[in-house]
Amino acid sequence: QVQLAESGGGSVQAGGSLRLSCAASGSILNIDRMGWYRQSPGKQRELVARILTGGSTNYADSVKGRFTISRGNAKNTVYLQMNSLKPEDTAVYYCNTYALSYSGSNLEVWGQGTLVTVSP
Image 1 (cartoon, one colour):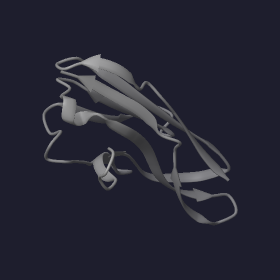
Image 2 (cartoon, one colour; image 1 turned 60 degrees about the vertical axis):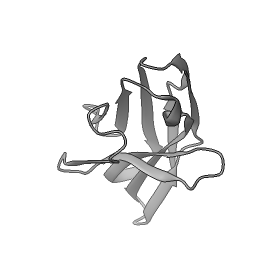
Image 3 (cartoon, rainbow, N blue to C red; image 1 turned 30 degrees about the vertical axis):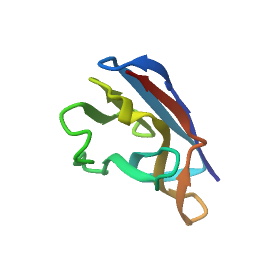
Image 4 (cartoon, helix red, strand yellow; image 1 turned 135 degrees about the vertical axis):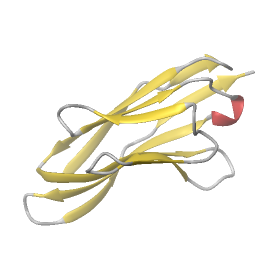
């Protein structure tokens, strides 16, 4: 079983910065991609950014140039540095990963979510 633990959400004024962290734990043989999604009230969950095993990254157009995703040295952690935050960035942010467990199962795992609130 694989678990994701997120931290770093909170409240900030527009123009401010926050850094989200996510750590994977459990019976992990290998982690493929790790990423961040977000969901605001009344909207579908959307991809914010993801980073693949080789280090390539994808970003939503709305966050390009403001957010940066990176992985820690341990490779089971992922960070999202969010700068120049806007009120429309307000959402619950979810960490996501695709992992191969020691039992041989390919798993898609979600974190519990962390709330980011950006005030005008």
